[in-house]
Image (tube, rainbow, N blue to C red):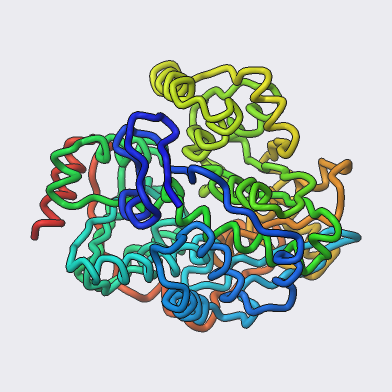
Length: 463
């Protein structure tokens, strides 16, 4: 299995090199040269199997012969043993042909754990075999950083620098990063937005001197291994509801588009998905793109669902690349234009192709709060604001073919104030994180200046 850049100016690489690099050297994102396929019989065979076994099959299809099957099986077994629910991603019914897939039973109580736990083990396996040290630089809109810290804390071969926008994530999200005591972890509060943090990461990856000096890598959803791991729960949820004998739809709260793109990946592998509803908050760049054909950056608005406060969704480049029939020059031109002008018009044929699977819905703040209390009253399920955006978008999409699975991306206890304000119920942290508020924090504050942060990363990596 080989991987190519969406911008076409980097040589193809194998799975391991794509994972360790994160971003392609030409600024593009890696995608498989061809999409692996599962037959209907293989998909049907996933029903009732342990989650770790399905994960090993799906991720193994992308790893090829670069990771031994028995080694990958053990990695998956270890990774998903860290989850507090035996199903790893259980599904709960909330209405006629409407379900929630709970992705928050991992160590940092967010869906990012599903991919990050296996990614950390992949890094440890590969880097240990190469006797190599890497520095991971990640930007987080709330949950990626906490999941990365939980997965890599104490790692022998990896240092992690997590950038987060100061004051724009919840206290619980912040503390999952900043209370880590291990010396291989550094957290930086950036006085800006997530988009500022993400832009700094991309610029750092394009600095060849820095990349080589600290052996830079990334675990944001730009890393294709994250996408591959997230595709797994599309398979497990769908087969639990009758796939492949009937198609299933999904409603996905989305910011950086990685979670929704994982559904596209599952569909390309053979899973019959009828529709993916991309649910955004008022930062509606993705919803507008799917509905109007114009991908246009606005000003980031702080919301109740901060992990989605994004106006430049990195993984949309992967879908654009597929939509223009893998024309790398066109993809590079478009995203260079987006970087400079903040807007691109999706070619009509590509937009029509995207709408064969995707729809977009934007949900406001009042609707998010109403959905939290309505879901509690109607079903007994207490949901966080991000999940509420997904549930609200589903209610606004009555023509979505059922059954429909809403991806519940975070535990409500990560946003206790907003959940309490909406529902009158204060969600409690699970037992393993109950003392999170009493742990001392450790982080730096830096301005949103690329050179300043690059210097910090290099000093931390070389210390």
